[in-house]
Image (cartoon, rainbow, N blue to C red; front, side, top):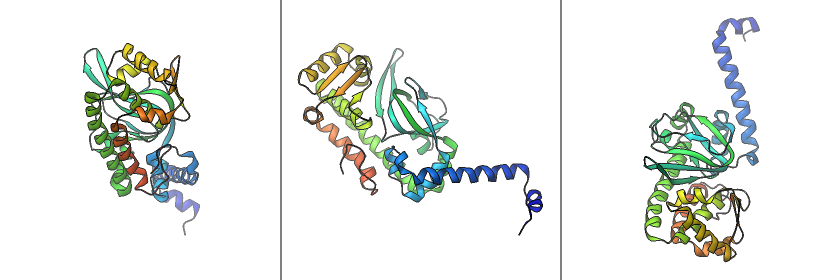
Length: 277
């Protein structure tokens, strides 16, 4: 057994600092993983307890502010995010003056697919629309964990498959279904991802999300409100009757949800929020 003096001489100051940092990180991860009630992200909750304990030391809980840019198009991805609360949009450039939403991300989601796929840049901008919180991890740490933990890699690849299905289904939806159906689909997706029944969004943003004029969104929202399904306010939408809203939506919503259910339900974790397995 080494004495304290021998221990000090055995390791350099840099080694001792690194060992101390790893020890603190492990203690922090075990403490957080033990209290799973703190974990709201559906992907993290789908991980086995031992895997979650190994991953958590590398995660930092950070606030998400409205209009905060998490990823900028064509720039290196420095961090990935497991969203706990709030909503973020993936935006693609349509022309020099316009960007349209191609994905809505919430507490079942992960921001950082380029890292999972082995690339360093993204063609999309990711912007926070509804403020909240997320677990943040550096791209380098995530890549190292993916190489070391097969279960984490498999989970995130399954998530990639779900996002591919969503992208393809949205192309069908946007080309074949009415604005009212598409709006109902978007509101249900957002409702799945937030706490409570209130969604802090404007008509202008919904117009960009659905690729239509703001006036069209206002008209469609008015009809849903007249039917008693939603209530509009300044910068907010309240879901009043989800069951009737589900009656308005096209089959695209159910097709996309079924892919996301596979991530948590097939892993044996608790069903994610309002979605039953």
